[in-house]
Image (cartoon, rainbow, N blue to C red; front, side):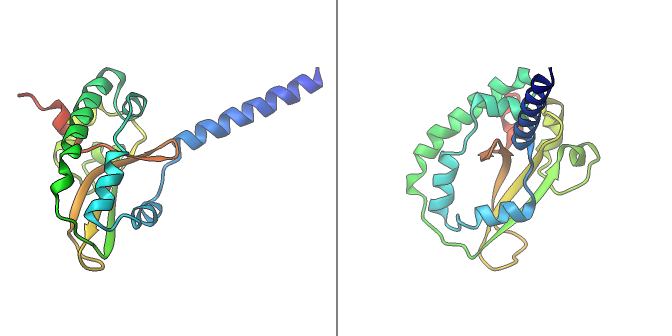
Length: 169
């Protein structure tokens, strides 16, 4: 009986660790380190083209009934990205990162696009969103923004302007 309890305990610990790693959130500093490898228009566009969400990732961010709608919107973005090859490349010198959580949205604090409050009821709790900005000078207040990234299961996933997927025509 004792060996079975030990075995079950080890299995439980392994499952617990894997669940924790799926939900581990990155910090702004970790995000800056990662995105600092993408300081040109070409490199960030290449990253974005491989970082749009899957249905599973949409379900991680959006409540189940809204995940497919967002996925359809993101899939439309793939076509637009394929046609973005004519964008002039620009090199940047720094990366800026801003973050906010679902709780920040609920409390109306933080710096985020206004459309995020309209999509709040469609989002799952416990998320941290990252705005990545390519900056022309070190420490600049503004740059070229990419709204929003979420770290999911060891991968940075791009959720472009989530509120636009739910705009009524």
